[in-house]
Length: 88
Image (cartoon, rainbow, N blue to C red; front, side, top):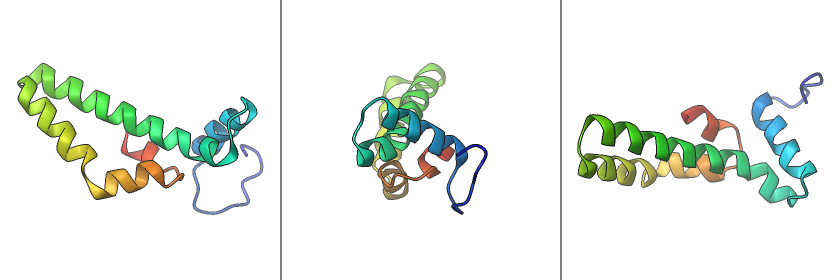
């Protein structure tokens, strides 16, 4: 993946993570989507942490609700492409 990049419109880091999860024994469909799902989880956690630090707990909760309830963020998280990693 790193040296031979024949497929257009996919991200090299996402491919490397997907291949790593596949070599660890995950099913193909899960190993392809797991990096994006984990990146979405990191995004939600970091937004919550930053909002809680600079604002109140309620602002942090509502920021996470609006972020994770967003159609675009949810679709990119489960699409199995590198776009979920770009949001982080």
